Image (cartoon, rainbow, N blue to C red; front, side, top):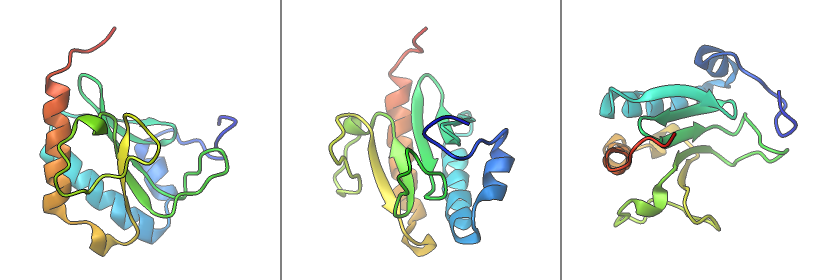
Length: 135
């Protein structure tokens, strides 16, 4: 456990078991899309949420049940580590005040359009392929 969070998970399964049913359904769908779109991606917990990487971090899923610094999100965030590089012609991504990481927030399962999410995950994957792993 760190000073910014009141939870600490040992595994993805522990993380998933902690989630309330509505959040779990959204996280399960987003995970399935990511793992189907990028079969060779590495999934691991970072900041107690699943991050997906290959050469570098590609994306992450952050549900509201996992707070950061006492702040609770309004919905399940799908974040892109290199979001500023993604072509966002659909205006899907929210940059907020951030320069690099862009996100999209889902409040309900019905808001997740698998085709749209697949497009953005694939774009993020293509960006990752142009990068070399930093040591």
